[in-house]
Length: 206
Image: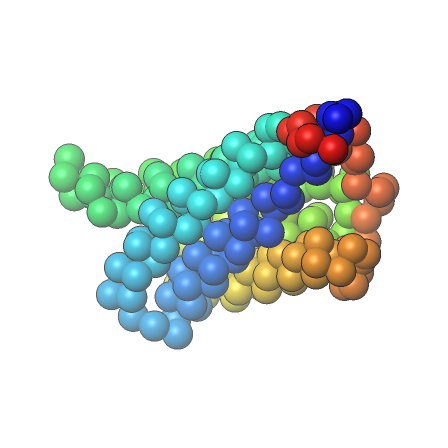
């Protein structure tokens, strides 16, 4: 029996859906659709799906030799975990964090996302759309905390909803491609996916 490579499953849809569902829930609150009390459900999602599942998806990108996916999913998984930890355990425990400091937190994530957006331009339009909408979302939410202007928060909420929809779309496109064996929903790839199985994989008896 000769060993052959068995392709690894694509973890991106898991990470994208963890990001999309949690972002959609929080963005509904930011957009003013629900009161701040609804954040408790967002925190549960941030721990279980937006944080944990997305981080797992990032780790699963390592054997696929996908540096961008590894950094993106682990980073945004960590973002959701840090957000949930702050609101659940630390906010108020050592004094309330000034709004301007929270704004800096959001600004730094906006800068990081802007960097990732530049990198995503080499991948495809569907990916770059997500990151393009997301860095605008972070900066709008940061502006809301810097200025105390509710309009910025509402705008950030709507950009967050658009970001979540873009992530939902890409997750669906990648799942359909995996099931059908060909691209069903256009993703606007700049180049074809890397032949992961030719680089790494797990052996199976032929």
